[in-house]
Amino acid sequence: MFRNVLRRLDNVIGGEGLVKSLDLPRKDLYRQLLLRLYANVNITTLGAPVLYAHSPSKYLKRIELIADGKDTIKSINMKAMVLKNFFHFSRYPARTVPTLATGDNKFYQTIVVPCALPRAVREIDTLIDSGRLSTFNLQMTFGAKADIFATAPTAYTLPNLECKVHLLESLNVENKPLTFGVYKETYIEKEVTQTQNEFQILLPVGNVYRGFLIEAEVAGDPNDLVINSVQLRSGTTVFFKSEWLDLRDFCATNMNMENQSFTGFAYVDFCPEGRIVDALNASQLSMLEAIFDVTKQSGINFIRIYPDEVIVPSLVRA
Image (tube, rainbow, N blue to C red; front, side):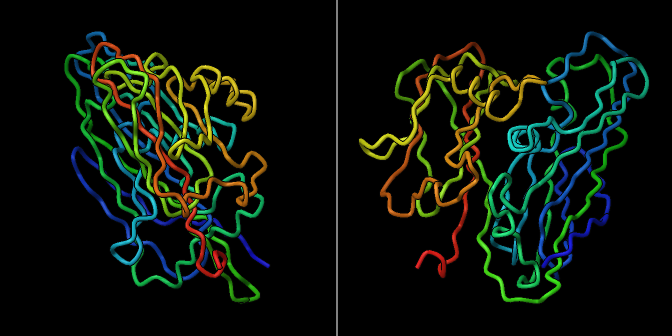
């Protein structure tokens, strides 16, 4: 039996180009970290500013969970986590975006950093047992104030920035021995420099994949015109194949996502019923690659892949 407890940990004060680290408590089982990013943009001369999509989340360039000083469990930007929350929880994370004007413009963005795999039949199987770690750190890398605006105001400053951190943990009140898998989140990116029908991104093999969030970006903003189709394959074996816009429509229907735009993003889900036994097992594969049919757009084009990877305990593998 478990008892779930939510508690506030601390505020992390950010700033342009800073890397800040927060020591996390090491005793019980981590279910979620909850982050709320606050930013105050003071505009002295307005001009004609235009925000990036999902601002201010792009300002938090990287969120990392690092165990024992060397094992990176999470390494992902806040914008991608916003969209992952949307796909996994069927609700766009809470945020406030002001109508831009001279003076103070106060933003906030809330996200969940899941330690247990969302939408799994037994999320409890992937909690993080912090009591077994010698160190556990939440590390945040902040960007530049220009990351908030596609077109910046004529004159502005970023006088206040902080991230409030809460922890939702589970207490093993019966103190039974437990074995957990690890839910790992990282990303892979590659620039699209020309139109081609076999744009390849190699994916790591060795663990199992619940699914993949895929992002297409042009000039810093998500875009649906770069990717025409996507497939996942190993040699001649095709595990997934779909047209891009069809895949996005399937996501909207299956994940109840029609209440807000998710332009430039789609999710490939190998476990629609939440059964990890259905995940794509890459442990026996010599290679795995994502293949895209792409059309290069004007400006700098990127494709990013955010795997939902599960490291299965060796006891379970056997």
